[in-house]
Length: 314
Image 1 (cartoon, rainbow, N blue to C red):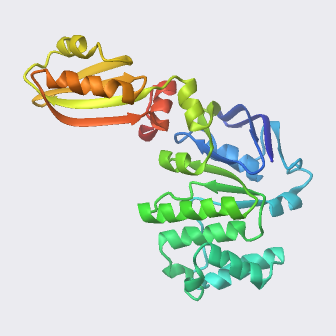
Image 2: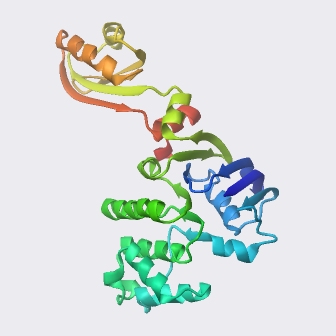
Image 3: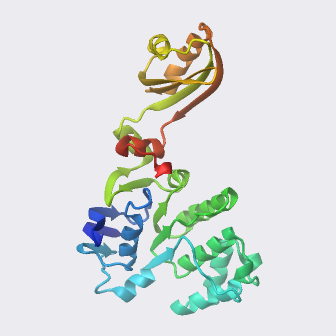
């Protein structure tokens, strides 16, 4: 559906996108992830036709913006981080306005309004909509003309958790009912994992990882994590390194003194294999378990492995 070949884009001395290539298969849901300044928005704007690359090429369904501008505008649906509406138009009037740009009838308007669960708000002015309802209306506008490619740029930024999950449910329904290819940019790691089977991570204008989450974690040998807080008077890191260093599948361990005890952070091959022996060992030691957290590594961990920074901090 989308082919990006060796594309670069600079703004003065800043190279926002650097010789980047990317292919999106028809019907795929892909998350584009990265910190501020990674080049995500610049890349998306070039795919949308809002920016022209300095070099390289972009084609969508075999067409390019230079020769097929009108066709591509009917093929793509866009929903941005924030959409401005006319305050004194109702939900229905807003949808009919955008439908008129494409010659779309009332049947499709009503169908999409129901799809995004705004039928009961059809006579409400847009100024009175909640943040979640406004984003659902923006999504309705984006899919009104039944696009083949849907580009969502930070669609749930600023929404409360309930509104965010409602939007996720809508996107999952669209995946089943509409023949869509989705490109989603997001800062929310959970959102990328939940909605998209493919994750593309960008940093400094380049792609640094590409694949499903299990593939990426496996490729970078990410392992799993166990963290424990122990109440103990024995706080010497060397003691805990030696005592717990025999745990099965242990790859790496860090011991940090904390109030009234120590915090032990362990990277293991498999939690299921390491945790029983760890718990049995703690039972024999002069320590009381205060806290236990065991989890697989996440996208944020993966980003930290590759860049030395946590995605949530940059």
